[in-house]
Figure 1: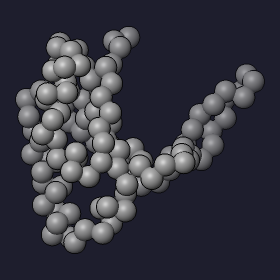
Figure 2: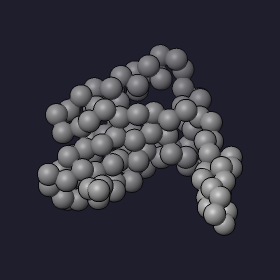
Figure 3: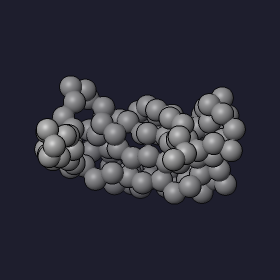
Figure 4: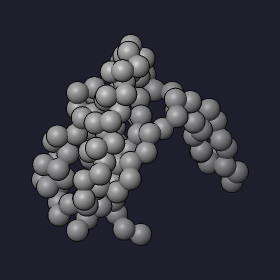
Length: 111
C-alpha cells in the first residue's frame, strides 16, 4: 500500500464565523473521520504563518511566511494508506472538510 497525504485548504474566516456549538459539531466530524482504519492521525496547523527556509548562498535563511496571494490556507493534513490515487480519492470522498474547502492528495515517495 502507498502513503498519501491529504492537505486540507480552506478560507480560515469560515471557521471564525461559526458558533461555538457548530464549530464543536464540525470538529467532531473531523475526529470521527480520522478514526477510520486507513487513516493515520491527522494534524491541525496553528494559525500563525510559520517560517520558510531558503538557501541564501551557502547559508540557510529562515523568513516569516509563507504569504500567498490566496484566500485559502493550509489548515492541516492527514496521512492515508491506499493502493493508488483512485483509491485515495474514493477514501477521501466523504471527508467533512469538503464542506469547507479543498483537499489536495499527494503520494508520499518512500525515502
